[in-house]
Image (cartoon, rainbow over the protein chains, first blue to last red):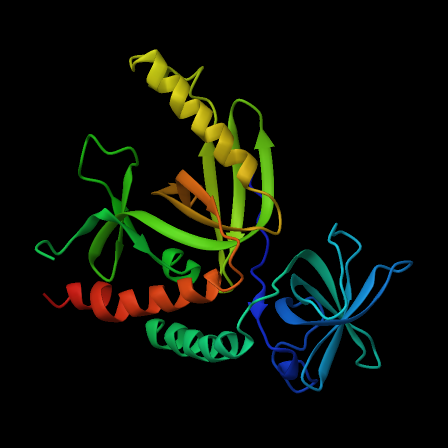
Length: 120
Length: 167
């Protein structure tokens, strides 16, 4: 039975994706969440935002209906250009309209603390 | 809880926790798996996990192998679809086997890339990795279901699973 192993997408909030962040690595598998600001049909490129932070997402492999203003979550690999321009090449994505983003951020902090505490 | 075992419970675990279970050779001759699994010294055999389906590989009439990502790790899952031609089921009532096969087929159609699924099943080892032999699959439509699952797992670990080892 062959098995396909893929990396888990580390949970990040867009504000954490800056050059000094440990997640800011070419090829890093990430899961990002944000509100769709724009979508270009020709390039299948989406731009999601969370507060003042935004990220380009290549959605070539996805068959989703995109609606500006809706919230989306993507899992994929980060591509960092030499000028530190970044884009996530999404493997999977979904619409998460109705997600409580404050609860998400607070739970993510708890989850990281829990993982740290359980690994000791 | 009277027993210090979680063997008869579907233990809610996050992927990183499931993937770090301790594996020891099974002492029971009736066991499905040659290994048994324990978390901090407490034996567990069934698990409930939730995550985004990130891989899907179907072998019709044999199995559906898929993996779910809950943000802390990826869990390999196998859903058997060979009930109608497996010798393992040959001694069971044919109508029961047909029903089991029918349910497995329904579960397999629920598992689609990008959806969030809740999976329950038996913990098994395959080529050195921990995987779930799936018993049932539910698609979660609520966008907050994954967050609530994280909170459930953390609460259960703190209030129940971690405490059992001290008893």
